[in-house]
Length: 132
Image (cartoon, rainbow, N blue to C red; front, side):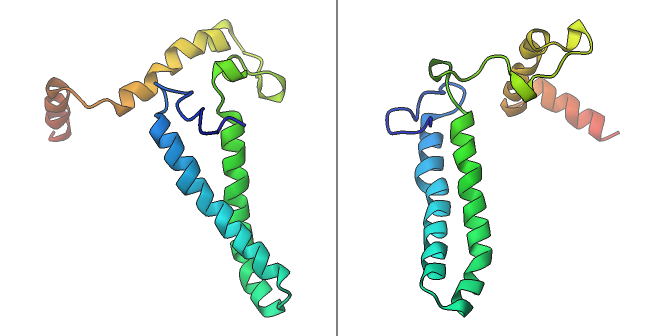
């Protein structure tokens, strides 16, 4: 598992260590606490309360499982993360232009462009084209 107190910053500068810590300690912990509460309610043996807790078991259990997968799949290169996919995730390219090595340099900059604030020139062009 990627996450422990020493590893929150392992994916910087791509993902903030503070965001990872918040995500793990607060967000994921909420699912774990809710799952434990639902399991305790079910284990108490009251069938009416157990039936009422079933949706919470699904919600919090699913959230915990999804986040556990999230932490396992987000690993820095130093922990054998990243790189070219293998096994069922590896898709045979239909042409050289769709290979992993061809696509990565073109794909990685996209989130940077999406998250970047537009320049005043870009904003002015956008306003002009949208007012037509």
